[in-house]
Every structure is written in C-alpha cells, then in structure tokens.
Image (cartoon, rainbow, N blue to C red):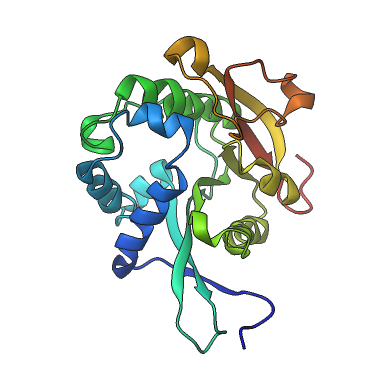
Length: 256
C-alpha cells in the first residue's frame, strides 16, 4: 500500500541527474508564453544541452565566490512506495548565496548580456533581454548588493505537481537563509507567486510586459499571466500583459 503522505527527499544534484534536470526544466515551461517567445521554434537539442552543461555549479576561487556568490543546485526525489522504495527526481532548485554585502561598484557591474553560447541556438536574444535581462536589472537595483540568498530556479515536473516537492526545495533555502540571518530574494513567475507568499515572501516590484502589443500574443483560455499577483503593490494587470514579481523574504527574526 502506498503511503498516505508523499515521501520527498531534498538532496544535492549529481551529474547522473542531468537528463532529469533538463527534462523537468523544459517540461515545466513548455506552455509558458515567455518561453515560447524566447524559443520561437521550440527548445532545440543544442539549447537543452547548453542548459545541462551550465546549470551545475563550477569551482570558484575565493575572489570569484565574493563576486559571483556560492551556488547550490538541489533536486527533490519522490518515493511513491515510501523511503525504502524506488525514487524519481521530480523537481529542482538553484540558489546563489552572497554571504557578505558587495560594494556599489561591484553590484552595479552585474550586467546581463544574453548570448547564443549561454542560451543555445534558436533563442531570441532580444526577448530574453527584455524579459530575463530586465528582471535581472530590477533585482540588482533593488538588492543593491545586500548579503542574501537568491533563488534563480524552482521548477517541478508538470505530472508530479502537488506532492510537496517545490515546497520542500523552497523550505531548504529559507532554512539556510534563516540560519545565516539573511533575507531571501527571487523573481516569481505567475504560477509560483502563491507558493512564495505562503513562505513569507513580500512584493518588491513587478515586471509588466505587454506581450499582446509587443509580440502579438493572445492569451489562451485558462492560461495564467499573473492577473492576481502583486495587485496591492502595482495595481490590476492590464489586458494583454504578463506580470512577473520581484519578491523578498526577510530573514526570520530580521527587522529589515
């Protein structure tokens, strides 16, 4: 008999997980409007391979760690028959930890320049810069180099939703940040917003992209473009606009 509560384990990602990580990442964004615009012909094998190669943290010197932060790539395993049975990787997260504040010169130098080498053949770099690049710039200018834990990726396999894998990965991060007395920062997609709010993340800013006017995209029935997200901060989302939200969670017990 299967356990009444799904058993989820969070662990550090290993190279053997690469295929699962790539599949989950692209499956999670398969029907996302922005992903379709960034990869108008679909994610190519080259882009998938590029992501699989760059997603794993690489060794850094002390100087590089101070500049780039310490990266953590985790996966969540689901054990359908309990902890002694077989498992499958169903979700992943990637974090960057800055243990100490950076100088104004350092954080203002954090420029985002999309390249084919980074995103793979077939990527529309102009869309990537308007979306990912602009979110990066907003995050940078709000954070101002503060010491913090940043969540760059949190995705779950579409056919393994509601098992608690995303929550487990998120809890791992906020527990780490709290243990260090640091805030946590992220950029929320429309669908992730409610989960982040449950974990105490607060609205900081929004990125409203008028995808209807700018790229001629019409929202399909049932799609979520962030209509109910950060309304108190930024007002209702206009028709044809896709909203992402810059969010910050103060460290437990912190006052700022």
